[in-house]
Amino acid sequence: MTSQSMILVRHSWRKSLGLPIASALLLMSAGHLAAAENWNLANAYGATSIHGEGNVVFADAVAANSKGEIKVTVHTGGALGYKSADHFDAVTDAAVEIADTPGNFLGGIDPLMLLSSLPFLANTVDEAHTLMDIALPEYEKVFEAGGQKLLYASPWPASGIWAKTAISSVDNLKGVKIRTFDPNGTKTLKAIGASPIQLAWADVVPQLATGGIAAVLTSAEGGVGQKFVEHTPFFTEINYAVPLNFVHMNKAAFDGLSDEMKDAVMKAAATASDRNWKEVVGRTQRNYGKLKDAGGTVVTDLNKALLGDLGKAGQDVLDEWLEKTGERGAKIIAQYRKATGE
Image (tube, rainbow, N blue to C red):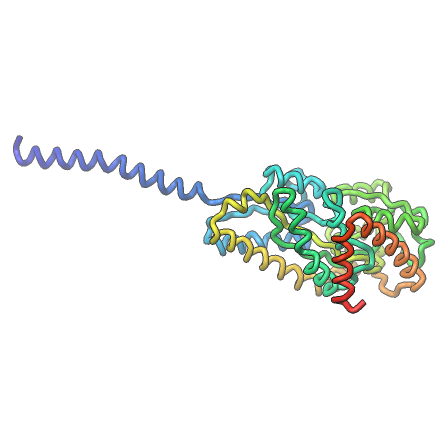
């Protein structure tokens, strides 16, 4: 074989060897890309709600903290087909990796989860934050038992009553079909003579439009986003409760992360939670402005007799909740009363 022939053979061998090497490099690269986590986050409420916006803050922070290794896709407005009541089981079963769920929809899992919506217990954002901090270890246990990891919790603006007229006394609510969001609200309003109906969020506007309900217990936030003013132009600020939403994820998915990626997710959770707690402070007044611009009326001058009647009904609900939660609930309430000086 000539020198030239030997050179051609060596060149041909190197060229052919380069193909499997190149293919291996491509496979390694593809494997690296496939290792990145792609998670879905379900939220039954709208993209412009405080929690829908907070979900985007969380997703962006996860992407930044993980340097693109974890991608969270936010699905608001029930786009994945799950109502809030479906979220806990869906996350346990890993049908969806993460969900953002109002605590009132988790009362069937554990009555402790109804804590934040107990009537007239925490009436301000600061009080609600104090109550959350005290109850956080118990909240975490509930999700842990369901094979889940609690990422963060954050508030809705205080709940009030949307109705066709201003609510100045309990007489304005007697016999009125009013939507409530959990058993606490149902029991409280039934005690003063209303006809409460517990409905999922997606069912509220259709029921208002068809006359199935005539009033809604929720925040100004929720009603503004869904244009309640077209059906119920009056919002009465009773500061019923400052209920929490919980962002929770499948624990196996979380546990499968490296320590570095777990830290990235939890730092993102803290970022979103902090944002929502700060945002809720000024959001109520902005929502009132939007409501008035749409032709609605905000009622803030409340009748003391109305608040007294509602407060008595609320105390009965608290007593019943304490019976169901036993020592766990009693300990939380005692710590909360001490922390708030009540």
